[in-house]
Length: 161
Image 1 (cartoon, rainbow, N blue to C red):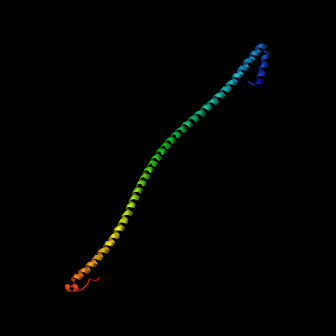
Image 2: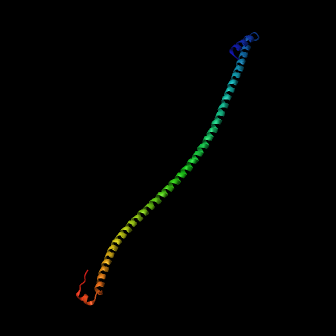
C-alpha cells in the first residue's frame, strides 16, 4: 500500500478503535505491506537468479564446446608435430645419404681422373713404343734389304739408311 492509502485507512480506523488498537493495526498493516513488498522483491530476485542460472548454463555449454575444440586442436597439433618430426627425420636421413653419395661420387671422380692420367701416360708410352717399333721395323727392312743383296754386293757395299 502507498502512504496515502495508509493515511486514509488510519482515518477510517480512528473512528472505530482506540489509540492502542490503532497502533497495533498500523503495525500489522505495515508488516503486511512490507511482506508484500518483500515478496515482490523476492520474486524479482528469483527471476534474476533464474536468468543468471540460464546464462551460466549457456556459458557452461559454450565452455564445454570450447574445451572440445581446444582438445581437438591439441590433438591436431600433436599429429602435426609427429608428422613434422618424422619428416625432419626423413630429411636428415636423406642428407646423410646425399653426403655419402657425394663422398662416393668425389672418390669415383678422383679415381676417374687418376685413370685418365694413367691412360694418358700409357698412351705416351705406347706412342714411344710405336715409334721404337717403327724405327726397328725400318732398321729391319734395311737389314732385310741388305741381306737380300747378292753376297758380293754386300761385301763391297755399305749399309745405307
